[in-house]
Amino acid sequence: MNETIKHILARRSIRKYRSIPVEEEKISTIVECGQYAPSAMNRQPWHFTVITNRKVLDRISEENRKVLLQSTDERARSRAAEPGFDSFRGAPAAVIVSGDSEASFAAADCANAVENMAIAACSLGLGSCYIASFKIAMEKPEGAFLLRELGIPKGYRPLYALTLGYSDETLGERAPRRENTVTFIR
Ligand SMILES: Cc1cc2nc3c(=O)[nH]c(=O)nc-3n(C[C@H](O)[C@H](O)[C@H](O)COP(=O)(O)O)c2cc1C
Image 1 (tube, rainbow, N blue to C red):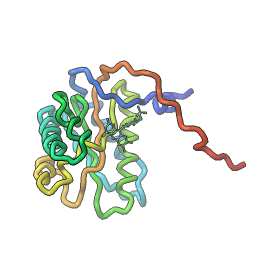
Image 2 (image 1 turned 45 degrees about the horizontal axis):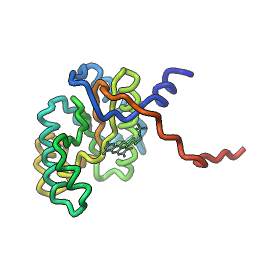
Image 3 (image 1 turned 90 degrees about the vertical axis):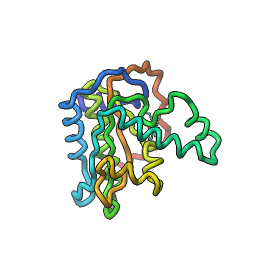
């Protein structure tokens, strides 16, 4: 099996990290892999916000927590009330990928970028987790200040984030792949 396939098959979502920083050189390589993802009409309708300051991640989490505590959904409220609540799963770093709202395929293009980065991270010995629940507060009008603070360009909206760090998780068995999801026409 070649190295690329090995890493695609080995990648797992990591939600517990060692408290050591990720080397900036590794993060730059990972983001470059995101920038080389395919995009519709090669529009590259993305913006990458690399956050290695845990205080900034905590601030975003705290805003999310406040929103969730007001939720009508009981499960969301109790999750937000847990002492260790963290939208970034304890990672020392995260990359937020925002999409150009004018680009028809921005969601697909940005998703491609995130997956490229996740595989690159795995190949560099790093854990990662694809996250969508980090933007709860940013999607509210009262959370718009976060977009400004993070320098997300006008006309772009946060879609996904990838947490990054050295794994401190012991993983169980992988969930089996769903059956009957492939048809070969020969
Ligand atoms: C679009 C998308 C959004 C996701 N959002 C979250 C999230 O908010 N929080 C989280 O812990 N995991 C999130 N995940 C990770 C999935 O839960 C994970 O990929 C799935 O359970 C399969 O596990 P694996 O990545 O280890 O193969 C997300 C994944 C995708 C593709």
